[in-house]
Image (cartoon, rainbow, N blue to C red):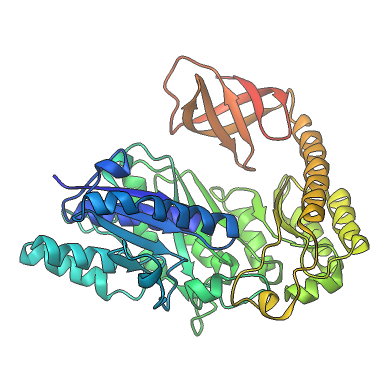
Length: 449
């Protein structure tokens, strides 16, 4: 049997895309390989949001050149944001070892190439043709029952799965390359998403995370379209699913309807991802975020008042063009005042084609970016440790994901990592754990029952 190997960089959407590519390849007779050297098909699913991720993918691709020369029959597929929805005519010149270029979320080009090369049966070729005609990912179907199929290695093993609900983005923040590489936003139909979630539940998945670059804009590209809150209510009624999450949100589109759905629906977890990106109003305006420091503070108050016990995570970029020390201090003050549960931090790097790269000078030295990053990292570590310490001696419910170095690892509804020891099999089960130790990043506990 022929085999495939997939390497993935970047966000949860890329992880979901790779999972679906695996399902598509298995549908036409390929099995997973342990290493790239052992595979007949190699897929590199790429990210360009940060220069570091792009450099890593390009370096890996360059390293495959000797393998391709040694074995010309191996198929190399470059996929994802390096390719983009519009393609790039220079890519074939830059990377002659690549046989197939695939846009984000699109298994069609590779599947069609393999169908034609391998001389598949009429039924298999028609299946490949349907994949190739898709403008974007819909579902990877199980030929036996017509339902969404996980890769074989994950069926009955995967506890938590990512489900894309809206592709692309139409907001166009000044620093963000996603609209250029993943295209305008396109929402999937409610029925299609629900069918995929039901199929995941049948294959053992207990938790789903609904994905979108701006997930709370779900349905806004459709006249009189559904809202994310309405979608959550549909998914909440699906048997077998224990927990529902969604990310990433944008402060401008977080409605009371959505917050009420989180508060009311028993399966939707009390955790909100609401990136602020910066604390200074001028920097936010230059980023084209569309809100102010005070707007964000009021949003956090509104979230906490409507969802008791909620945890809130944010994203922050340090060193955006023109950011002065006093402006950065406003970000420090914001984090210090709001005491959010998690802050995902990044140093600004210009991405080709974005507004900030075309119109703004990257004038904050790298050394200063690193200093600001470290300052926020240290601040947030103290805040997170303080928040988690409040859970010591309390009992929390976790969904157990895996056994990690002899301990069971799971997450609370508020997305906090908890470890405990027990001799029984707990993967995929809900466990009640009394917290005994806490740090900024995780907690330890003992099984209650």
